[in-house]
Image 1: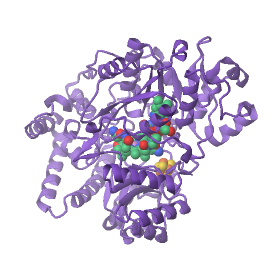
Image 2: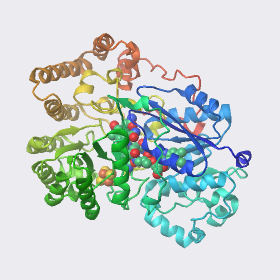
Image 3: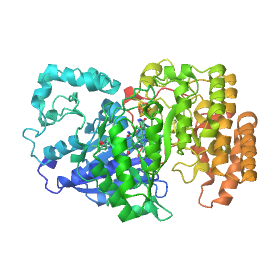
Length: 603
Ligand code: B12
Ligand code: SF4
């Protein structure tokens, strides 16, 4: 990295390897920081419309003469990200920086796979200091209070950040680096919240966590002109501009949620900054329907009322939707939200069973779920209910409670969202508590896990979902992880009860998605039952072949064989034929895993 420091022409390529259908706004925010520090920025985003493979990323980096590459990484496509990283490193030898939810939780892993620097948590301030470091400007980091490196302050920071975040604790514990040594190794050691390998000693260093950003308004303006807009355009709208960020953080501590990047402390953008963003998107893109992508928009009442008032005054024509916790709304607030254009609230309902809610550490009663759903409906706002299924402790009794709950609120729910069965993400209590016993540790390093294929449902951002799912998985619910026992094993009885519940959710959604088209609803439901029956009880290959025929007739571009990419199908057929699984990697860059990280057989 040393010769890079003397370079004056910095060109930072930001890569988003996970397949997306909308502009990944994290890259806009990071590009704003990079540009402010004189870096040229380019993006390479893997989209459903314009998919990129490993060699494409290498070509782009090479042709553009990138001096640095940053990857935004999520757990679903870790191996692909590492392949990209390895290939670029081999061809160009430039510094590779990883950030995002996954490396923030598993920073040491990223270094072991060959990354130069892992940026843990919120990226902007750390990237700013790294820019200064690369440009040779970092003598004493401007906003880094070196007193933070005292053990007392480190402990304090750990208390608020690390000890509550399993990932940070793991990172620090794994390294056991005395503070005095960290401070004297080299300049990088002065930058908080990074993990890297010390060039001299070969040791992996994790610097102390930095405090969460307190003034979100001070962040540089996000850059939006860095994307190939065509890759995100649907019906003349570039998808992604509609997402607004008004707060960061969530006070919840749910066992299945990784809130390691934005933490538990709520920080708000000022209403004025958000209104400026709305003006820009409205004027430049004509967008009138926004989604506030905050983890939990309603945490601060003052913020909610301030936003409602400003939107109502300046943009009475726009409509918007938000995410919220059921225990952070009340009828008065709901009325104000409705009055200023809020048309949908997405709640983490998760379950209608109290034992399950308690085990998820949701700190919510079933009664509160029930009340919030009805209050929202009565306020004239649609309820989008996010549900979790496939929890390992559930018995038919727990599921029956869910069925009873479904019937008690179904008339007040607009759509039920089921992103497949629970995925225990790293950085969550559920992953650390249950991983060993269920033998799914580091599952993301198993090439046959096909995480991208799981849980992408009906109206999400997939353009060719039949290539990945069975008919009923696409139209009713995705039981791939349940049927194949990816994370947890389910008894036949459990699966039967779940099927009943899932067909209720799925059937309800059909009535909303195809309201008035009763014949269509009936047809989809019947075909889904048939598809389920053939897939589970006759022969998965038959289901696959029939739907493949149908897909290739309807969509000439769909690859006939692409449904083999679906791990569940592959496994079920392989099991039937009692033979090994075919390899999925068709790229010339195959992953060489460090030997200690060879994936366990988690099938
Ligand atoms: C909006 C959203 C969506 C949207 C849009 C997603 C998109 N691609 O833009 C939709 C609804 C489509 C979606 C879908 C899914 N999502 Co989502 N989503 C979110 C949400 C709420 C906000 C994402 C966001 O824009 N954040 C704002 C940006 C700025 O934050 P950020 O990406 O973390 O980036 C910051 C840092 O991480 C860091 N950073 C990030 N990249 C890099 C790179 C470099 C080089 C550096 C230096 C720093 C850096 O700096 C950034 C600025 O501080 C997050 C929760 C959250 N609070 O982040 C979940 C989240 C990202 N989603 C998640 C998941 C699991 C999914 C799904 C898989 C769910 C499912 N089963 O269907 C799908 C995946 C679909 C897909 N193909 O993308 C998880 C990811 C966990 C993980 N370990 O991978 C999250 C974290 C939710 C959670 N708490 O568990 N999602
Ligand atoms: S699931 Fe929702 S409420 Fe729970 S910690 Fe995550 S964002 Fe917060």
